[in-house]
Length: 245
Image (cartoon, rainbow, N blue to C red; front, side):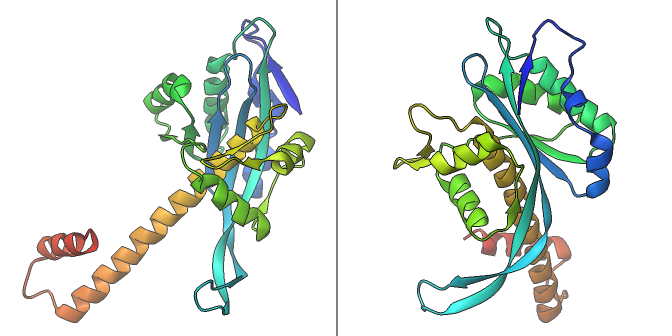
């Protein structure tokens, strides 16, 4: 459940803890990895999530009071890691970078790697130079990521790794007003990485849906109004201006 990394032992590799050949054949869906970096005292959490199709969910409309059924995305958090440094050392970030590159070299379909905080800037920059799409995501700046994860869990739209510590972190999570946090004697390192991974995947999916809807709207309006009054680029510009109001 916990992997202790030795900064100086270059023979120790994170890729040895995962059977990539099995995982990449379960699904070829794009993977979203989130790294919640803890340098010294905290654990580093790393989780990977992918979109697993849509399912029907039943919800109550708070305005009309009616029960409605709609489609909602389903997710799989395929794996989670808790990493700690050897006492007296810092977490070897270069091993995390090597791990991601090893995954990619084995054909694991990584779509994006997100990280939290300023401590992970170098990791994102190095991965970007290697051609990996990266993003800065904080699950603490707003409550949106955890609100989203809570709804997904309550609607049973996710499969999570069977890790006792992850279960404990979910059960002990507290709403402290501006954010969700752990008890004084608790933690949420693994859960933060799960939350960031799911949020990254869901936001990318929402962006793709929005882009598809905009394209469909553009085609529909173009067909309705006709293209004779303006050229294609002029039409797209007017549509963009209208949607941005």
